[in-house]
Image (cartoon, rainbow, N blue to C red; front, side, top):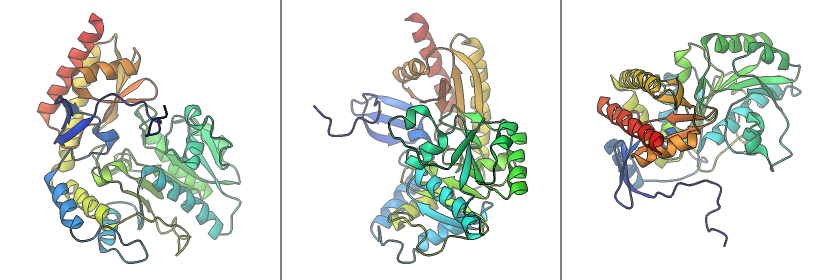
Amino acid sequence: MTPVVMPSYGRTDIAFEYGEGVYLFSTNGDRYLDFASGIAVNALGHKHPRLVKALADQSKKLWHVSNLYKIPEQEELARKLVSASFADTVFFCNSGAESVEAGIKLIRKYHSDIGHSERYRIISFDGSFHGRTLSTIAAAKNRAHVSGFGPMPDGFDQASFGNIQTLRDKITDQTAGIIVEPIQGEGGVRPSTQEFLESLRKLCDEYDLLLFFDEVQTGVGRTGKLFAYENFGVKPDVMSLAKGLGGGIPVAACLATEKAAVGITPGTHGSTFGGNPLSMAVANEVIDIMAEDGFLDNIRNCGKLLFDHLVKFSKTNSGIIETVRGCGLMIGLKCIMPVADFVEACRKEGLLTVPAGDNVMRLLPPLIINENHIDECIKMMTRACERILSE
């Protein structure tokens, strides 16, 4: 019998009834420490009182009017994002894939508007993930994601992540830009190096290419800075945001410099639901909370503490964990055993994590965690390893 919900996910047989802070409670009453955060979405945990209030207050006033009219909450959030970043202007949409699509269109439109419509190709990198639309899977070129959906949209070339020479070899007279995740998430929490991103910036300046940072997962505080590019001191021309921006409400944004967005005029791009008053009210509150003194400091401090604990943990469990990598509260454990088995063992101990490529388990806790939650996580992982070794 065909399921009423399309079986596009390999779902775990758990349903959650409610959340509180960094915890989720299942319908059968079990409590879980949520170090998955809806895949980096619930940045402020569950049922954050200020987000609940922002949502409730706005829900009583106005939900949707469309972008045919001015939306003051949208302009307010745009000003906050612009003042905190490299960008001059913002386009709002609903999901990470949409924000990446917007960036791809910006890059092509820029070159078309300056008289070089032949320049439309974008270079991406192996191990990347940019979404599930046709163009975003075409950009990432993950075989598992493109299989059966061909032919793929043209316009994307791929280089080796971290290898500047393979990138140079891909640049042609048709190249328009480069898209990169400062830290690959789905690809296995693979951080870029300072040298690599600096080289990308230099190449883009040299060839008049637009540099596009996909910060759907790394942005909005996840790495201990509001945006991951700040850790490297390398500014892009275009940047996509989503996930943590709404704290659980679907909202995304594509940020750009004035130069990169020159071709965007009325009618060139749009989104029916993008930037609606309801999502903007919550996203504004998220950014306000993260702008408060000490918030990002706590992420960096907890990230370092968690990382250090995990390094020690990996040494005492060297038969299970090979390496630890990441930044802030985006940490990956490269496993020796199948990662799915380790994720399941942790879940049985009450710890929720996220599998990724390269046989990596991701830890993406809410950005409000403290030392007690870190200790709890390590204890659960220790029991999970004991469970594995005893079976």
